[in-house]
Image (cartoon, rainbow, N blue to C red; front, side, top):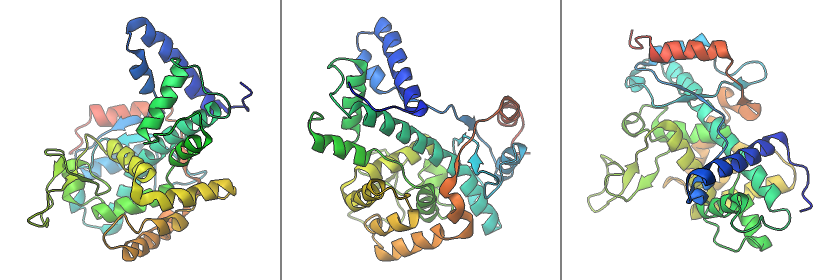
Amino acid sequence: MGKHTITLMGFGLLLLVMITAVVVAAQSPSSGLMVSQTIYDPSPQTVSANTSKALDRVFESINYDWPPAGQQTVPPLMLTQLPDDFGKVLQPNQRRELFLRALLPLVLIENRRLQEQRELANWLLEDDLPAEGSAMHTWLTTLAKQFRVRGNLQKQEARQKLLIRLDVIPPALALAQAAIETGWGSSRFALEGNSLFGQWSFVKGSGLKPNQRDADATHLVASFPNLRASVRAYMRNLNTGRAYHEFRTARAQARKTGQALRANDLAEHLHRYSQRGEAYVADLRRIIRSPSIARLTEASLARVNPAQSATLNTRTKTEPLGS
């Protein structure tokens, strides 16, 4: 197939899917499902902390400050959940900075995952589809189902729809929404259910009941096994939900014209995210324009070197974090 050049990032994902296909095929006849779930992972360093003070020490141990300094590279840290005392941090500015430091790596990790999926999908869709039954075909068609693209990928309309949905979320926008939805990490839903974006669920046992819920209402605020799962669900929601069609269209237009994905501009199209409508958008933009978030346009993931990894392992696995 007359493909254009694929970058190293996309090639890494391509190679991983192909290698996994060979390994799984040798182990199980149901390799299609397994391969479809294989996504390049930036190997984030999992961290946990019992107290906010301990979490701050973890960040300080690898010189991760706020806002990110230098070239704005951010360590790929995956905090599993917010400390129990997070809502009790006395200084609002201290809690806000700790909240942003905790969430930014998760947002960047999930964005990189989306970017690599997008790059490989774009490469595969440039010409004829991969052979039916191949690992690449299985991966691509499963991806389309995950992003609710029901059309035939042989047709240009379906291909464009997939690429419009399969895209990143500006970090500043994600952080601003999380800040609003959780009260900068102090909400019950964030602390007890790892829920960062106020997503609803109507499945029994899948979340926490809002205290102010109307008597005839049945919705819950969805809970997640960890913070990363909440970030991933939020991005999937913006990328597939009917209410955010305008958001995706504006993002695609920016891509088409070669413009940067500006959080402040895209926030305009999220008035349906909250019942507060335009007032919600105004709050989003106010946070996005704040000095601590406005400079995150160029933030990117760094690699954790062996020394940092050893320090983190010591902090998170052997040190009494509550001390």
